[in-house]
Image 1: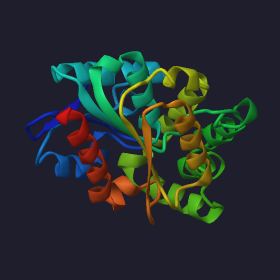
Image 2 (image 1 turned 90 degrees about the vertical axis):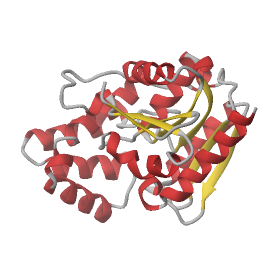
Image 3 (image 1 turned 45 degrees about the vertical axis):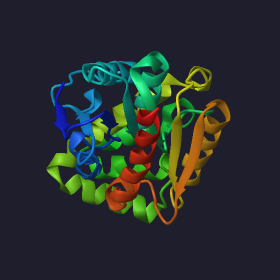
Image 4 (image 1 turned 90 degrees about the horizontal axis):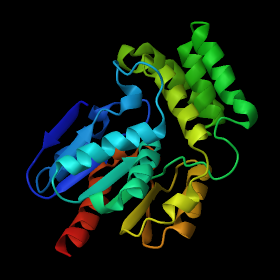
Length: 256
């Protein structure tokens, strides 16, 4: 398990989104590390040495191991699919955590994320197999993330040009399949009694707000926060604001 350990103080664990590695959380981590010990890891699904695709539950186990290594309950932040991993860790061992901030997790709340029968996955993987990873990612971005078609095509084309990210495209599709295999877990999440913030961006795809709505209905201690003018990439574009939300929760739960 490759981890990053920065700063000193009470512990915060960051779980990165898909199509990335532990470096994705670097900007938020650097801000928080001025006051806290910040731990983050390269998610198992995206590591080069991963081998076969992994389940969300396996990734949650790694998050739990990292959290327990801190020696006390931690504040947990999870972004996008990393937010689903974080929710699974919270449900599995709530005593390992003091609270959590979850940013727009694509939790399954009804039909599969990849469409009925996994149709999106089939088309995206066929494109990757034919030597067009950018097209495969564009299919995912348009039909699952629900970006407008021109924006999805541009994201796919740019990503495929960068070796570091091109190799992650098949892993993103594995991540999507793992989320669908996990299925609807709202009943499990309803058992989480910790202080939580459900964080979203004003300009993110509408289905992500709907998933936050579903979570808010079942999570008894969750506060909803929307970042004005922000989108799903707020951790990169509005790092200070995301860090502020995490810091405010940490101040609240660690003071108690």
